[in-house]
Image 1 (spheres, rainbow, N blue to C red):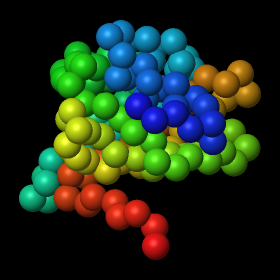
Image 2 (image 1 turned 180 degrees about the vertical axis):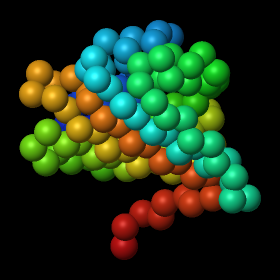
Image 3 (image 1 turned 120 degrees about the horizontal axis):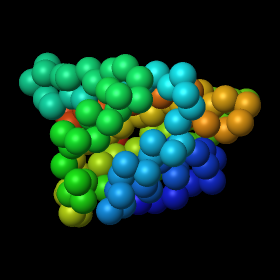
Length: 127
């Protein structure tokens, strides 16, 4: 994973997701955590994984472990909000583009998380 100081919590989140212990992201969430991951698979198809801690645990159980890596291309912070734009890769091959936004509590825990992903849009280098 490419790390970017612009969004330290989300950068840590994706580093943990790519690790041997992706369940460690559960240590980053607030008690009232809510999320939505809209997981596009192409051809207009997507699944929306959403809910609280229990739903996130279910999401973690069903995902491929140790196969995809997240590469943050740009990141920023605005107050308690963090934003990233990146891509996932399977080995060296492009898999999908993703965007993520997290709202942190005053204690730094992730309270809300929104991730969108699509395999049909590969980002071009800025010109």
